[in-house]
Length: 303
Image (tube, rainbow, N blue to C red; front, side):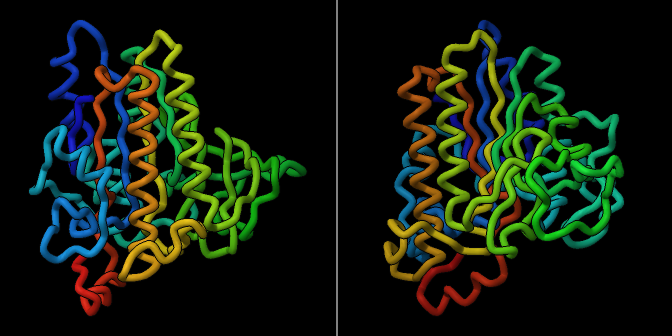
């Protein structure tokens, strides 16, 4: 497995590595955690970190670790815009904060890493957080809305100008961080609202889809690009029961450990399906640790 660790700028690694694999196009998996701090990874913070991340640590030893890579923004929406388009986030209309709802931030004619790779013969998929705007159309109405929406979109609602219109062949997603404060996650299958899942069901659900996707693509004759974007360890911090109490600093540590295990399972699936030797894998965070993590210093953990 060809691995890069903590690389922020997607277009950079595409330009560097597609030429290396001239005989066979490599698969690409881009794992982008949500508010994961540099110090939350144990191999990057051996002295002031209290969270074991054995799977990420093993992965880092196999490849390259970038310790001086920078996000162009400190919050979710603009940093993800930069990753997917290769542009500075301040070139959009969003000049502060993150989106709650509204028209797509990526212009209709703007290339994304997904559309670029699709043109080069890749099958492109996304799993997880979008957070870049979309509209919706209630089944009983022909009106399209981009402004404030109800806490729970009805099942069957059609989404407008989401990731499927931005170069992805398939995408299993939720819209923004705001979803996690309604008591459940509203999941969307491509462009149709599919179901609601409990808060602690998010990461298991995304992991299941990721493993299923890798397994499915092992029988395909096309290279693939997978953008895997779990909302972890962003609030709400909701580890599943089997992970509660695993870490000495509390639920935040539990949640990071669960994320590390999920990444390990994805890598194991890649190996099992015989795809590891021709796959570039990137693990990074969108914008680093949240301010709320400062309180963990009292427990000896510097996120």
